[in-house]
Image (cartoon, rainbow, N blue to C red; front, side, top):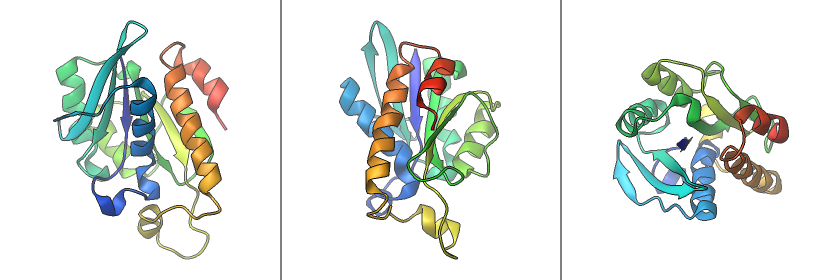
Length: 186
């Protein structure tokens, strides 16, 4: 079984913000894989389907970013899912806008959603797609930056990264994550 977790914040006011790129990727996967996000439980919305004979889950925690682990842990436990089969997709300030960094493990890197997941599942060793959003160009505070939309200039980069993130997740359905990393990093 493979499972994909996209991080973001619920609510219309956050819908188009940089912090919600993880939700965007899950929405794209939902369309591509024909897995509707039609179930609400575990402080999140999710869907499941079978792709190439394997069960696949898509999850969007609705706990707000900083409490994402409160959704991920009970979801994992209920469905008896393996951390090795999980991919978490989230925004990354330290990666230029539109770039991807795929990793099999690592620290939270200051990302509060990742800190929460690590605290709740008890390990840093899980697959992740870090979706680059860049850093504020001026003295804009980081919280204001991540909770604002991308600029029009960044839109083509972001659209491309969204497609490549979903491509990478789909590739994980048929190849080890190490190979996915080699193909999609950058």
